[in-house]
Every structure is written in C-alpha cells, then in structure tokens.
Amino acid sequence: MAAAASSTSLKASPSPTIASWMRQRSLSTTFGVTAISFRRVEPRGRHFVVLSMDAKPTILVAEKLGEAGVKLLKDFANVDCSYNLSPEELCTKISLCDALIVRSGTKVSREVFESSGGRLKVVGRAGVGIDNVDLAAATEHGCLVVNAPTANTVAAAEHGIALLTAMARNIAQADASVKAGKWERSKYVGVSLVGKTLAVMGFGKVGTEVARRAKGLGMHVIAHDPYAPADRARAIGVELVSFDEAISSADFISLHMPLTPSTSKILNDENFAKMKKGVRIINVARGGVIDEEALVKALESGIVAQAALDVFTVEPPPKDSKLVQHVNVTATPHLGASTMEAQEGVAIEIAEAVVGALKGELAATAVNAPMVPSEVLTELKPFVSLAEKLGRLAVQLVAGGSGVKSVKVTYASARAPDDLDTRLLRAMITKGLIEPISSVFVNLVNADFTAKQRGLRITEERIVLDGSPESPLEFIQVQIANVESKFASAISDSGEIKVEGRVKDGIPHLTKVGSFEVDVSLEGSIILCRQVDQPGMIGKVGSILGEENVNVSFMSVGRIAPRKQAVMAIGVDEEPSKQSLKRIGEISSVEEFVYLNL
Ligand SMILES: NC(=O)c1ccc[n+]([C@@H]2O[C@H](COP(=O)([O-])OP(=O)(O)OC[C@H]3O[C@@H](n4cnc5c(N)ncnc54)[C@H](O)[C@@H]3O)[C@@H](O)[C@H]2O)c1
Ligand SMILES: O=C(O)[C@H](O)COP(=O)(O)O
Image 1 (spheres, protein in one colour):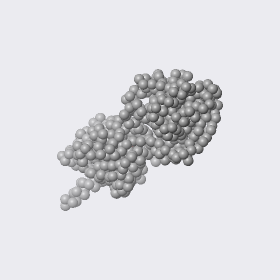
Image 2 (image 1 turned 45 degrees about the vertical axis):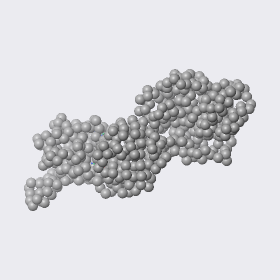
Image 3 (image 1 turned 180 degrees about the vertical axis):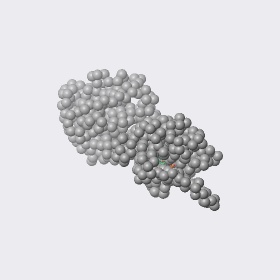
Image 4 (image 1 turned 90 degrees about the vertical axis):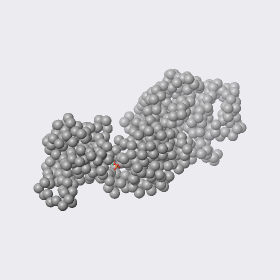
C-alpha cells in the first residue's frame, strides 16, 4: 500500500540514548529454566495502529460536506473538494488521495479501489447507508470504510414523520392545487393517524425514533426486525412481530432497514398482496427495498392507497418515472438527512473518523473492520504490538520452502472467554505472519481475507488462568505447524515452531522460544543464538556487535541447566553486518543462530 506521499508504518520510536538504559535482572525458574535479562526503558509514543501516514495526506471530498467537518479535515490534510465527478474523473483523481469522503450520491466501485493503486486508505461515508460503497473490494484492498451512523438519525426520523403526516393529509398535492389557483377542499380529505397501526420495518436507530414519535401521535406501533432485541421495543411500548404479521395488519408501513441482498425488493408483488387494502407506505430507507414496478401496480389496484418516498432505486429517478408521477405518491429528493443540524453533525462525525483513521487510530465507526470500544483498545494496545511481533518472529523462524499453512494462536488470560475480543490480536498476528514474506499490505481490514486467500489457517485457543483478571492477557503463544525451522531450538517438544510473549510494564517481551525461556523486549531486532552455557558468552557477542557500533538493547539467556544448552536472545537497534553475524556464528560454543527483523 505504499504511495508517493504516504506509506504504512508500525515502526518503533527513534533509537533511545544510552542514558535511557536501565539494567534489570530477573530470575525465573519455571520448568527449571532460568532467564536472565537486561532491560532498557525506552521513550514510548509508538503507533500500534493499522494505518499511519508519513506525509501530509490528501483527502478528496466528493460531495458537499458541512463546513465544520471540512475545517477539521483541513487542519490535518490537503483537502480537495471536487463535487459531481464522473466515475472516470473519480478513478483518475483517486490515485492521488489517501482518503475519500462521499454521501449517497457517489458510487465507490471496485474500479475506484483498483485505480487508487493502493494509496486509498479510508473511505468515509458521511451518513449511514454504505450500499454505494463496494465493501468487498474495499476489504480486499485493505481500505477501511467508516460511516457517520448517528448524526442524521433524528433528521431521518423527522423526515419519515413529516412524510407520514403530509401523505395522510395530502399536504403536497393540496399545496400544488392552491398554488394553481384552485380551492379543492373536498378533494383533499385525508385520513387520521390516531389509533391506526404503523408497522416499522427495521427497528434500528431511525426506526426506533420513528416509533417513538408515532406513539406520540397516538398510533399503535408494531415493528419487525429479526435482529432487534424485544426488550428495547417493549421499553417504548412497541411489539416486535413477524414480517407477515407486520405487513398484513398495518395501516401504514414505514421502511427503515438497510439495503442488503436480503432486503432488496422486500416489498414485492407477493408481499403487496398480503397487505390490507388501502395501506400507506413511507420509505426513507433505500429505494431498492421496494420493487418499484410492483408498487406502481399496487397503487393502481388500490392495494396501496398512497406512498411517500424519499429514496429511489435510481437517484435521481427518470423524469418520466411512473412511480414519481403517480398522483398518490409524495416524493422528496433524498432529503432524510438534510437538515442543517444533521449535516453539521455528520460532517464532524465523518471528519473525525477519517482523520482518526489516517492517524492510525482504530475507528469506532468502522464498517469493514472490528469496532473495538476505546477503553478495550487502550487495554489491548501493548498486546496488539506484541501480537504483530510474535507473528513476525514466528514466520522468520520458518526454513525456506516450508510453506506456512497452519498457525495456532493461544491466548492465556484470567478473563472470561467472552471478555476478550481477539479479532484485533488475530489480525495483527496475521499481519506479522504475512508481511515479512510477501509484498501484501495487511491491516485489520483485510487480515482475515488475506489469510484465507493465501490458504493460511489460523486457529485460536484460550487458556483460562486462575487469578486476578486485571490484565486482559497473561501471554500469547504463536505456533506454526508442519514446517522446518532455520533455528532448530525454536521447535517445541510437540514439533511446532513456538514463540511466546508477554507484556511487561507496557512493553512487549519475547518470553519463550521453542522450549527455552528468554526475556527480551521486542524492539529493534533480535539475534537468537543457541550455545553451550558458559561464562563470557554475552561479552563475546557484545564485543563483536560493539565493534561495528551496533547498539544492544537487551540480552537474555534461557537455559535448561547451568553449563548445558542455552538460548541467548540479543536485542539490537541496528542491523549487524553479514560479517558480524558470521563472526557470531563462528564463536566455538555457538551451535546455531538466527537474525530476526521485527
Ligand atoms: N433518507 C435518508 O436520508 C436516510 C437517512 C438516514 C438513514 N437512512 C437509511 O435508513 C436505514 C436505517 O438507518 P439506521 O441508522 O436506522 O440503521 P440501523 O442499522 O440503526 O438500523 C437498521 C435496522 O434494520 C434491521 N434490519 C436488517 N435487516 C432487516 C430485515 N430484513 N427486516 C427488518 N429489519 C432489518 C437491522 O437489524 C437494524 O436494526 C438505512 O438504510 C439508512 O441508509 C436514510
Ligand atoms: O444513509 C444515509 O445516511 C442517508 O441516506 C443520507 O444520505 P445523504 O448523505 O446522501 O443525504
């Protein structure tokens, strides 16, 4: 995903000075293995994040966005506000952009992602519905999609109620008639709302607000939503019913579900036939949830007395659309979200989400990546870094030609299994496993997709520990099965490459390699040596590295017993030359060694 003005990075902060060294000696005798470690405290300030920028990013705003949002964007990035672009113009421009912000009027197709050449990192949908964004293509290209799901809820609900009341009292038609110089009082007799049954189809944010308001108008409100909790409906005096019951008992039907393959044309010939004669339909969701030809027929047959529509399958609809021109149809041009207040709110909501994502923060409104609450993120932050580094280490231990197919990740935690969201950790382990051996850019968005595409099977297992669940995790273990290792000591007793890590004082540490316990902070790079334990080894290796000014950040020796085989882990800030590595390999007691880039 590298591009002219940007690149992804998960790099450590700059090398610390010698003054930031701190020596710490720790001994642990678990399983009869002793680990001795020297640790340095480093300045933090690292991004643990998925997307981050090196240069000022460019954001293309392709549809009108509230001023406050544009200002937020301009404080952070170069902002190109270009409206009404043709699909071709959008594809041309996109290769120069790191983020794109749209409303419902721009199709963000697969071609857009392909044309971006990997530079596009975030698509921000300034609103709720993301049916105009090709989510599968976004995910495959590792592009995060965020939306602004809350700021226009009330506006959409108010528009729904406005359409409901305007339709019931023929407001639009009567207004046009008066303006035409007529005074047709008997023609525009309406219907009352009080006591009538309203079926809210889709009891999400907008549906709930519509239901609340309709109850205030004295309507009997029922709702259908296969995924909504019944207690939330009961709390506002709404009964959740089946689809058939909702549509067959309603005097008014208001649509509030997203457009998905399963809701597409959900109101069709078959379902119109189940409705009460004279039913009235309101749609502020998406045009595509109604089969528009079927609606025209239902209007003509009188099954549907009236329809009030804010949205259409094709927007704008053709001028000669039978539906729009129908005398019993009230139409508005997708105005649900168009209040001053909602547009400012949406603009701020989307600007913050896009800027946050470009800065590398995880977006709370991500559509194609796990949404992780911020308090959980704060807790998981060091483990996210640990996860990626363990993946990186493990894959670099695989001997060439082995082919990594099966990886097992074990999370040891005192938390209850449903109290630990591992999606983020799994994604970062995947990133660590795949990036060192390919040119693919992996992030939280495309991790599972990329793993699947490469035939990499990642299984997860939990070890539930006793004790206080203060920390979300005790350790993470990554095991790669059915491979040879270029560092034989990394193979565990059960035959897999195994690395294990923990977070200590907020810093990720490698704590096990194969069956050897070590303790080395996962910063810079690491040299692993297997040797016969004897005095002076640390000094010998340290002086070879010192000769070419390679800074050692950490050293740790894990041994089975004194003077027996040991694994020494050495953290280095700079990459040693081939010559130095060769000299380390030539130390007589060194049996094998490997240099691993973090
Ligand atoms: N006209 C406008 O300007 C405007 C403004 C805002 C929202 N919208 C549209 O309104 C719709 C709802 O928005 P929201 O913010 O309430 O979204 P939401 O996600 O909060 O609610 C959608 C609800 O639909 C439910 N649902 C999904 N499939 C369903 C099905 N087959 N049958 C019944 N319910 C189903 C979901 O469970 C969810 O509760 C979206 O399509 C959105 O794009 C339009
Ligand atoms: O899904 C939405 O948020 C609404 O349909 C609003 O769309 P708009 O941003 O194009 O007004």
